[in-house]
Amino acid sequence: MAAMEKTYRFEILRYDAAQGGQPRLEAFDFAPARAMSVLEALLEIQAWQDPSLAFRYACRGAVCGSCAMSINGRLQLACRVQLESLPDGRAVLEPLPHLEILRDLVVDMTPFWEKYERVRPWLHARLGDCGDAGMSPAEAKKLDNYVNCILCGLCYAACPVLSGNPDFTGPAALAKLYRFVSDSREEPGDRPLENEDRHEGVWACRSVTRCIQVCPKNVRPTDAVAGLRRRLVSQRFHRLLGRTTHEA
Ligand code: SF4
Ligand code: FES
Image 1 (cartoon, rainbow, N blue to C red):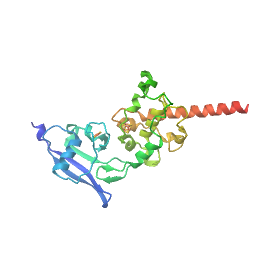
Image 2: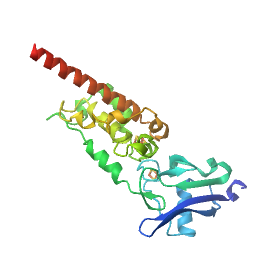
Image 3: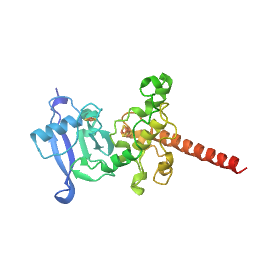
Image 4: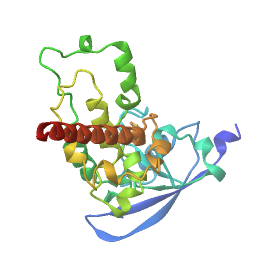
């Protein structure tokens, strides 16, 4: 019973890009009637204390990826963090870094989606070879690490490279690119990797692995980048070999 009476203090970043001004932290005290997640607490605060509080969510179950935010400086899904886990019953809630704040905890994900789109994140399948029939269970297993991505943007927000190189494609999009180029049903040569063979592409990654640390789905974008680099080097080698053979 005592646990249910505990009061939590949330300090939530407030800002409205349409109004301008400076972002500020606003404190809300909240005593939950039962165990709940940070997202559920936000919904309660919004319902009973401040209906203007803005944040994103949809599934409430770590599937849609939309409730990503910074909780006490750690980038997490609000629906996965339970109130009991908050040290001293306090939490500072802030929007994801590297993205412009629209309102409170809601950021503009446009750069994230634009970069995602530029890797053409769909299967370029061989004609007549669509569907699972074209892939063995062993081949499908190799992609497991990458298909689980829920596009929450946590890795993008955590990536230190994006601070100095904002055009960097970013971990989520590169992980998705690797997922498709590694798909045995993909039409060979139909997705030129050269688009990412540049300073803002795969070569920007410094293998800091913050993306791996924050991913709620155990996706390993750093490994995907390493795989893409190997493919690019191999392509260059084969091109060079072909040219040498041709010239000889
Ligand atoms: S790789 Fe992980 S952290 Fe990045 S967008 Fe996908 S699920 Fe989120
Ligand atoms: S609400 Fe969908 S992942 Fe949290």
